[in-house]
Length: 229
View 1 (cartoon, rainbow, N blue to C red):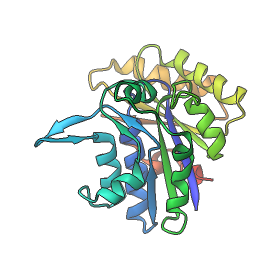
View 2 (cartoon, rainbow, N blue to C red):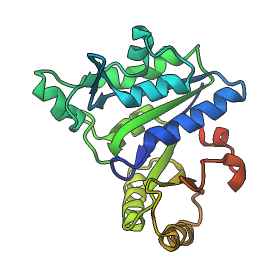
View 3 (cartoon, rainbow, N blue to C red):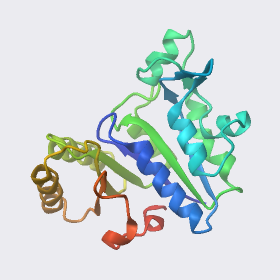
View 4 (spheres, rainbow, N blue to C red):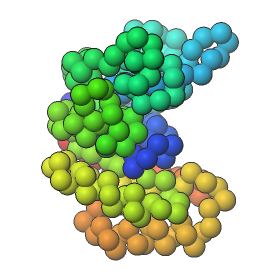
């Protein structure tokens, strides 16, 4: 079983969208895939039920039944309602994020998937629990790291800062998806961000994606499968 951890340079950069595109493509090529989101927060009410939209998207991407409660737990066992950092959301509910559960998820997929994608919450220095940051979890799980950044003003600083953190913590960064989340983004800004980050990070595979450039592994001679380790 090979794994890949997806983390963002910020919140709302499109981690789940990118994660689901990768999982869907792998599944369409005949691979068994699994998804693991160790913890999530921020639910919406739909038909009288609380729904965690990221979890639902991951379930769809792996070809799972969204109504299967056991599969929901396998994908994300720790879910909290408030749209806050998971440890804070848990505290509001009189609960806490369990560190041992954060690390246990890959075991459930061991004999059932060839490729398992792990999706973090927020950026590398975002709290996952009262004791652990996302970067700590990446290190403990020993997964290659794919970064997702939103292609907008300020992304160069955010990306370089995130890469610095990853390198300082000896994490294996295998690529960057520069995701255009704003359909009205100035094309000059979008293109200059891509070219500048490629100049500053020449060893890092950078794949543009978004409204005008769908995530396409063949466009950049990148195989998603190569990101897994």
